[in-house]
Image (cartoon, rainbow, N blue to C red; front, side, top):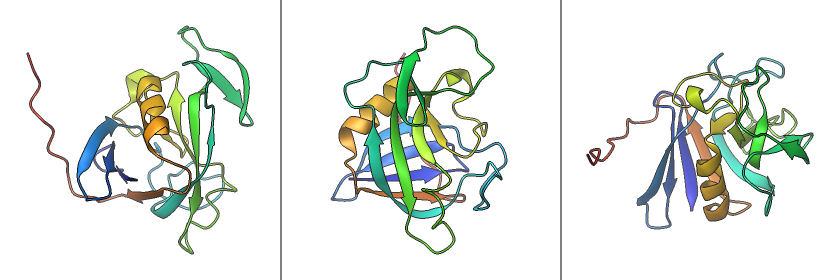
Length: 161
C-alpha cells in the first residue's frame, strides 16, 4: 500500500500493490501552500515514508501533544488546531524534504473537520478523525507516501441519492 496526496485536489488516494485506488479521502494541507523551510507552515512535497504510527488503540478524538495522549476532544468549538485520533509521522526521502521528520509533519485527525477539502493546515495533512483511523489501520509503518502539488485530478464516483 502507498498513499498519494494531491495538494491541488486536497485529497489522499490509497493505492494497493497492483496500482489500484482502494480508498479516497478529502484532506486539508497547508494554508501557506507547499514548501520545505522550517517554521514556514508549508506542506512539503516529494517522496516520504510513514516513519512512525502513534495512537493505536486510542479512542476517536484523543488529543495528542508532543505525540502523547493528553485528553479527549468532545466536539466543542475550539480555536486551537488540535492533533487528534491518530498520527502518521512522515519522514522525507528526498534531499529537499529531508527535514520533514524534524519539522513534525504528520497525517493526523483534526478538530477543524469543517475545513477538510480546503488549504487550511499549518503544514501537516489533516483528515477527518474517522478517515485517519481508517488510513492508520490500512497503511503500515514504512509505507510510501507521495505528496504532489500538481498531481492529476481525481474523478469521484457519483453520489448515491
